[in-house]
Image (cartoon, rainbow, N blue to C red; front, side):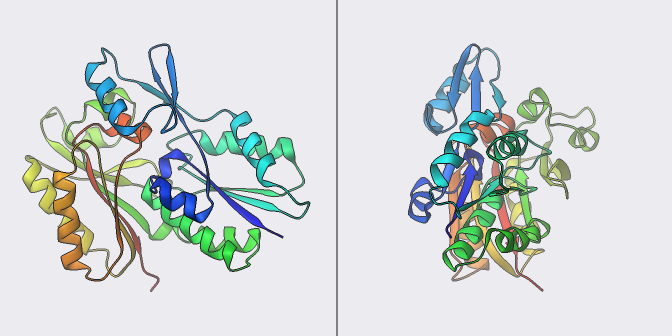
Length: 281
């Protein structure tokens, strides 16, 4: 029996890391007007930013169609006893898990296990890497799903958004608007709630203060089992966050990666974030 691991393009693990681990990735969609692109397949990070800067209207995003998942699942289920663990962006943020479930039901036989990570980006990526580790260690799909269940409660994102424009137009402003009031020049620091929805953490009046505050908040969650730096646009400030994190958590393997175009479309250029996984008590 072989357990295969599937994720989607918003997990933000570097492509070479996913390839080395044998992880299959199903891309979400980005729509600029009538043009549709598969996330990080038909459009990369830099081309997305170029189009975003020139666009008259912000792009829309959508989950992969069930057929995309079904094609991947059927390709991976080689032997009759093979199974799939499919780990995806929080259902509170996307319909991706729903599409995966439709595909799983079409194939049937209980061989596909869809996991709502209840988080996004590298926090989902940490679950994917753990699933790979367990699968390589000979664990069953049921055991892997059980092991991932507790990881969401230990995962977190602390994110500085340079402008609320993208959250507003993408419909993700929600509870964040309450802490901003009418002062849209204030920069929010946001995270994710227990179900993966966007929640406010705080607000700052300058980017410099916000960057400093990210590191202060991160320390409150130590000890850590995993850590990443996420950014949209240029990597200069992200490199500073990485250096701060390495000073605070010496010896830890810290990922730094650009957010996928789908995630970037909702938070916008200039976004910076720490993505962490708390160690078990």
